[in-house]
Length: 86
Image (cartoon, one colour):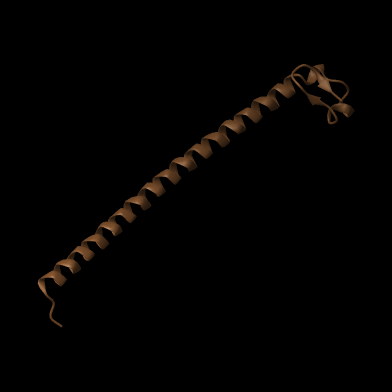
């Protein structure tokens, strides 16, 4: 099958567009992967912060344990920062 110069030129343009699309898709894939890694790092950092907050809360709870009522009622109370609720 013989092709005219115009047909060859159109085919080359189409091939060029395919290559551009493929390159762009690869770039998007890399961008998405990098973004996912950033999100993963942020989630890990946030989880660490939450762990620290929980640890600090736990510590403050333990530090105030001496001011709490008898041990058998501790599990029913909640520390509010202003006092204990039963």
